[in-house]
Length: 120
Image (cartoon, rainbow, N blue to C red; front, side, top):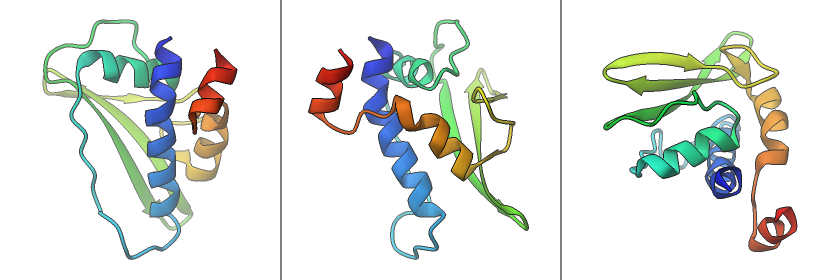
């Protein structure tokens, strides 16, 4: 169930990450979401990056789009108790090429009510 709930959020993040790498000058440079632990846990399970632990108060997941001389990359950090831990998506490295990240997330995306019902 958590994977289904998180699929909508994953879809939003993947879309924003894709747009950030398409040299678009419009749109925000940073987006912040506030949620409860259940929503954060759903996101992490949907992406298969959950730690298997309860989400402590004030925890956050940070998605960074990093550009260097070889291209765009996604790095995911999980901050708890003031400490950052890098989360690695299965099939990728700590710095995951955006194209690979999007491909790996494709089957996890819930883009519509119809797709949600189909996965159920």
